[in-house]
Every structure is written in structure tokens, then in C-alpha cells.
Image (tube, rainbow, N blue to C red; front, top):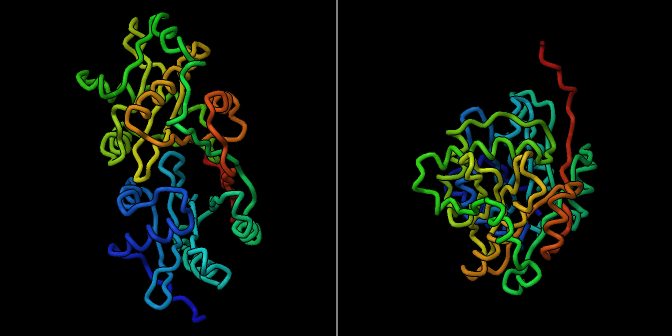
Length: 324
């Protein structure tokens, strides 16, 4: 087969790029709309995308980006995706070379990438390129339609009887501070989320765009626990719309001073109730492989683990410590 034509991504390529991702990951919702939203980056983020074409067809995508929640000016993420029927023909290698060439002016010190354990060819390719395993995390899925609430009877009521209010953001919209309160809770809850690199600051305006301006924001599915004595939001569990027939779980977390009171479980049960009311087929969530606190809740609820995702890291040169 002829060598692929590698060229920079252009705006009209969105539908074809989404099709490549759907072909590679048929069990996930990839759409033009989600790609466009994903491409709305903070000004400091450097990113680029390249297309591989054969016979006028887009057959592969390579891209680099940075992480707004783990931002470092010289650390990047790189992903190369090729339609399954056309793999092992040099297309991925050509895209990777182009992406790495494009990164040179930015003097990268490390590259993060990822794949799933049911893609052994991709795992072997990353290892061949010098990437080493960094972190693992499960995606787990819950069959909402067949979920039985009977074993969980009284769990929500017990939390409410203890004095907490369980509300959706939809119910709290009348409070002009509800967005700021959610952000304040998120700032604390995110500290305990395992991640492959150090946290970076995310300001309220950026968070507001991520959440409240997202096409996939579901205010009815963003649940919080309130402590009426302080007016503070003290726990959260969020559900997001997708372009598929499932809801995606965002962050579930509890302020450290309020743990072990059943708040996270009660909020997840509220989310399952909502999903059943909406006629949703499935809820999906992700947890780092050693995060036993959240894994144990999801396992008890009946979430079923899928093939594990693996983050890989390529270190190009050692990071220079910042002067104190």
C-alpha cells in the first residue's frame, strides 16, 4: 500500500476524525461535538493534530496536547489512532514521527500516552517507543435498568436524617453562589484524585467554562451534599451527558472532614435514581487501580470492571527543579 499522506488537521476534518475514533473504540461515544468541545483549550495550552490519508480517506489521527489540570509548559500528551483494518502498515509510525517533529520547538521533557489492556499491539508499540507504565485505572459500567434498590433501602434517608441535604445543581440554581460553592468543593475533592502528574491551578473562570458551558453539562445529574449549618457543599458526585446511550461519571468526592458518613454512596444512589428516571441504559465511571475507597463503593453497587486503561510515560530528559 502507498505511504500515507500526513497533513495538518483542518476544521472540516472533524467528522472524519470522529469516525477514526469510533472505529478504534466502538464501545465509546466519539462525536464531532465532543471533539470540538475538547479542542477548547486554555490560552497557555499548546496542541496540534495531524491527519493520515490514503486514497482520499482519513485513516489515522495523531495529536499532542497539554493538561489544564496538570499543566507544565514542557509536558505533553500524545496519542496516535489508526483505523483497525489499516494497522501494521506504518501509518501510526508516520503520524508519530510527524507529531514528535512538531513538538521539537516546544522542547518537551516528557510525553504521556495511554491505551487499554485489550489492545496488546498498542501496548507493545508504546513500549517499543520507550514508554514505560505509569498508572492504571479501571473503567466500570453499571446496568441501570436492572439495578435493584432494595439492598440500599434507607441509605439516602439516613444521610438526610443526620442533617445533610442532598440536592442537584438544578435544584440549587436559585442560589447565586451555587457555581462558586461547587468550585470550592471541587478544589478540595480533586486533591485526593490519583493522577499521573502533579496538580496545577485551575481558576474559577476556567472551571466555569469546563462545567457550566459544556454541551454535556447535566444540572439534574450534578449532585452535592450540603451542610445546612455552614451552607457549605461538602460532597459531590456528578453525571454527564454523552453522545451515547450512557451517562459518564465525573468526580465523586467528599471533604476530608465529612468522610465516612455515607455521603458519596448516597449521592451515587441519587444519580442511579435519576438515570433510571431518564431511561438511561448504563452509567460509566473510572477509578485508579489502587483507589480502594471508590472502587469498593462501585463494586458493591454492581459496577462491572472493563479492561484496564494504562497510562505510559516517555521521559525525554530529566525535569530541572525550579529555583527556590
